[in-house]
Image (cartoon, rainbow, N blue to C red; front, side, top):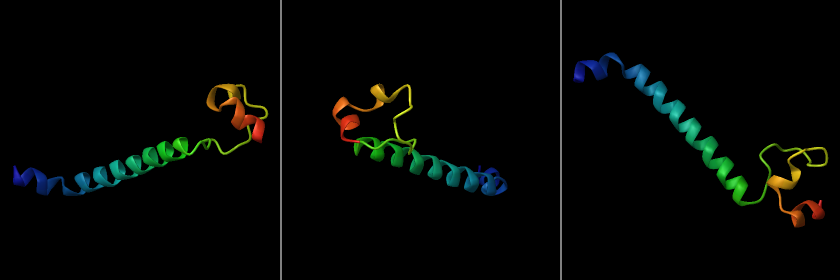
Length: 62
């Protein structure tokens, strides 16, 4: 068992780094969504889904 871990230590390390990056991205997207911010970063003027992702009051403020 320990030989396998030793042989694949670099692969395990890379996997942990990638998993941490994915977790950070998902956590950031969830936090921004709770704050009411859009993940695209653009204005919603020409977006066909503008009425679906934001409430009517939020779009009227802009």
